[in-house]
Length: 127
Image 1: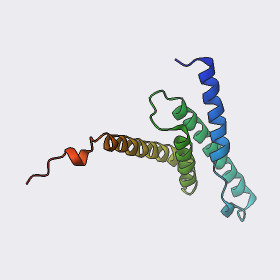
Image 2: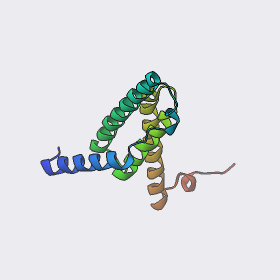
Image 3: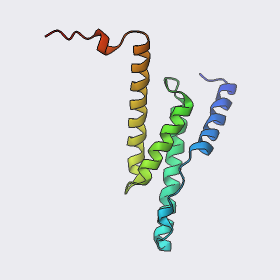
């Protein structure tokens, strides 16, 4: 389990990540009528809350192998991409999880390569 100092560290890291990598609302919404602008603000708020929840869960995961700064960057990237979708709150979780999975695979492949256990080197290419 976590001790209180570790929890405080995670909380501070989470707050810093939120400040550093929160998506900015797009300027393309300034021309929308008030009713649509309001719903856009609501969607942005919901996306921001969802991103914070999922980011917090990823940062607290004891099994996570990625550095926290990388996780924050991936959350920001997923939120930015999701914001351009028609239903950003529905798209974000899949994007974020997919980006995390891909980054983990890259990290594990890089570590394997550095240790000389590359799948390419160990594969037999005889015909």
